[in-house]
Length: 118
Image: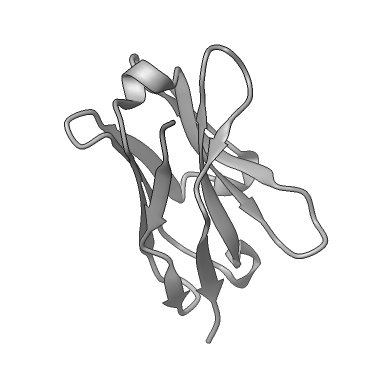
């Protein structure tokens, strides 16, 4: 069973930047047709931030990203990343890496906490 491990979370001031990474324990093109970043705050449902198809590299962003975030993949490292610029307090959340296999369902990492505060 493939596992996902996030890294790169932390605390940053408003307007700052962070990069999250998610490394899979196996080939992301073999296990998943799509991967993405999702975030969740207490009392709310997990919401999509950005996704990327593993073979084609096609990307999709949530409207609230507004050009501030960029998702990418590294097939040699079986990793996806999320570069986040212009972070605001409302971006504070637990960010999850998800992998979607063609058979349905999803695999999730343990989450990386992002705190935006002055």
